[in-house]
Length: 419
Length: 170
Image 1 (cartoon, each protein chain N blue to C red):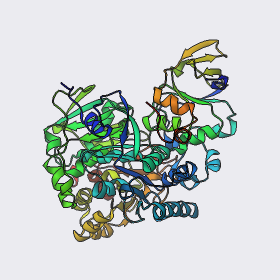
Image 2 (cartoon, rainbow over the protein chains, first blue to last red):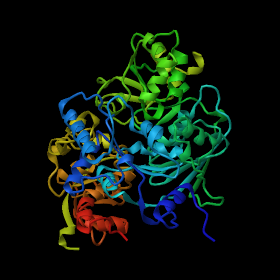
Image 3 (tube, each protein chain N blue to C red):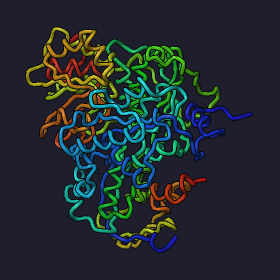
């Protein structure tokens, strides 16, 4: 009898054409490849160098203009031109400025359960929430995947994360993932796959699952994986992709290198302090810290569910005069829904600068670089020194609820005190 | 392997969690299509003098989780362009590690507590030995996976694919 398999082993095996297990090195067929405007130009240059300017599967090769979009300067405009030209030459899909962050667009439109996705962006792991093996790689690896439709993997060992209990009011998946990373460290799962499960995960929305999968890489993991279920199926149906639903689940008795049990019943709103994601504390420990800029958005927390949480807190209120507020919907579809539901009006009336779908200020290229000594509280996934355009800046990470409450108060605030 | 797999140089020492934002900051995003210019800023946010002082053959020596963060391959590329012959660390972030091999930059896992700033090292990639000529000591580094040795020996992933007209790792 074959040995039972983890989600990672199962998905990789199906694309390797043979049973593989943790530690094995194997070639696999790649279903979806993606690059963005920071990594795509180098991928194109590498393909030119190899004389391989082609896409093995152009319908599922996607070039995203999202990191510096719309372009703030001519060098980046020229980089964008390279991607548009490559798209024209090969038939690869182009996601233009304003269409959204690659990871949100990938789950909305391109990735299905059982797929292998390689993307030249570290948060490619977001799509793991759909039961796909999705991982970030560099430009050259992805360029080879684009042209040949193949890559190689060392099959990762898996940490099983079992989540139980009910989230307290105003505590969210974001608090859970920050708490987990604080627990195991920014390199606590280096090279491993995180496999999320348990009764709480079974009840979670896709939005929450995306948030968890998105940040797997912040613990060093190669992937953040979820079994598929009715919630996955409904999501795909809503996106017009119901026919691509597949049951993907780990085998009973699969071999986990480590099992981590987390009961969320007593979880607090959690914050990462500068300059590492694992530098976590509860909101009560740093309440009152002055904040110059609040940013709500990104592939971690820029979905409609996140904007809804923020809108409920910001409704009828205004930002603190000493705190600016930037809000960026993760994609065009999120933006449209937020407009229809009146959230955008709420945000603008609250004094927010609402910007076009994309990565926004998270990458430090444009739209909200920090001044020397300034403090930003953001719903993004990363707070490294220099991340938001200035090594003299200080970045705190939180849920959209903490972020919205903080924008109103001008200092880090427990959302439970303002709702 | 030939004698070209032996490198000699002095060390620059860094701590834990040196991120790709330290190595190739987002504020220099516009220089990603101009790598020689970007390389002038390599590791600037961790050590502003590094790019001025580093010489061909030198080593970057760091603690845990070197290269965490973004998938930007520009990070190992500009470390290599600066003349660095290898990065030695207690551990590496996964994407950086794979990118480094792909661009032909050796990344070696060893106990870097035993190496100080400015020590003179001789690293033999084929034997897995690091000689600390300043301290007159020897260290071993963990071997790379076979697939990565094949890519590194071909000079990087582009060269590997060109040479074998595809992957040849098994």
